[in-house]
Image (cartoon, rainbow, N blue to C red; front, top):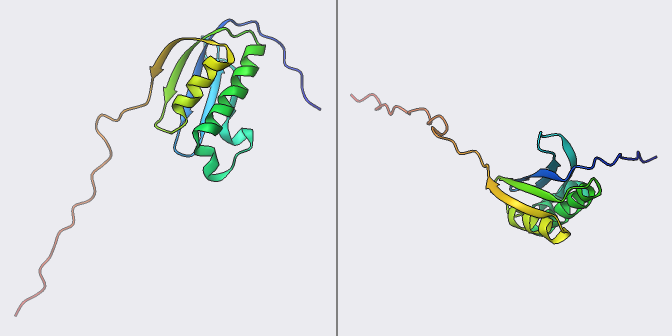
Length: 129
C-alpha cells in the first residue's frame, strides 16, 4: 500500500543534479537542504549502459520535478555536480516542466593536490663478472 505524502507548500528550493558516467541523480531540496523529492535514471527503470544516457537523465529530472511541483516548488537554484552526459538534459527538463530556474552553479569538486604519485621503481643492474 502506497503511503500518502503531505504537501509541504515550499515555493523556493535547490536542485542537486549529480551526473556521473554511470547514472544521473536529481534531488529537490528546500533552502535548508531537507529533501522534497528525488529520482535517478536507475529508479526510473533503466539498467546498465542505458542509465548513462541523456534521455534517461531527462526522464529522471521530469519525475523528480513533477513530484516537487506537487509540493509547491515554483523557483529553484540548480547545483550541478559531476561530468556525466546527462547534466544538461536534466537541467533543461526542469525548465520544460514549468519550474523557474534562477541560478545555475557548478559545484564539481576539483582536487588541488591530486592523488599520490606512483612508487618509484629502482632499476638494478644484474651482477656482472
